[in-house]
Length: 379
Image (cartoon, rainbow, N blue to C red):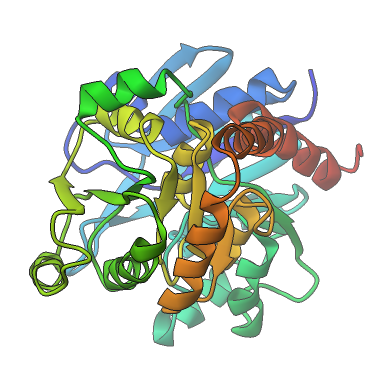
């Protein structure tokens, strides 16, 4: 059954949760593995853990392996010494090894040296390119990689420029995950969530400098006079810029009464909020992927977002949404106005078709299968 692939995660839970609980909590791990299995890959997962266990679920075998884990000063994670993880991977006789995250260079190096003949891929899951001594460690740890995977291939450039990835390493572009959200009855969702507006716009994400909510507020304020009855609904968790956001709203008549700070919502309410909305607005400076964009497209909502590599990939270069330069509020305002002129049913149709073909779990599974077959030399 296809290329035998082992996905490896060196991220070890520090809270003592059971393997079954972790599989429920770590949905990206299970969703991607199981989507890849449905695409015809013989997939197994080896996960660093504080206890040994094996769980069979939806065509995937999950091996939780306890290894030595050395505490790191000032770090909530520990340094996994993957002797038993390596043995478990070897026992599965894979054709390809897929390591999740550029976060464990020493463990990855250990695994690569134990399996020198096997092609090994590391997939980016966000985070900054290592600097200083961490760059040195990363360069050592990832020296044996055959390939690296990012949401967009351009995201590999800092790793290549820093020498962390060799120039001959193959670079693939595959979204790190997808979304189970679906479109629904818009009017029902509006009634359930108390949402209104023409257009109704949603923000989903932390209120921090990287997400840049102040640029979104400025863009919304500039676009508002040319829109019928715009309202912006903000869903967020961590909010270091909350006071600045509140002050910006209070100081501008174009924002006061039109920007609604909802705070943290449960996933089901986030889905209903998106179903009730016309647009998603985000002004991120960098993202490993962009879960809010994936969720919006899954609901048929058009993203109005910044021109960064991952968003470029998730909007098909701006074909199913707009991409404007970070911090360029006037450009974002113009994009919002331009997309509002497009009929809503056409916007939704294009978003849903692109999501199904390129960003759904089925699509991610198919894309990873091609990556694995290419690495194994069978494609």
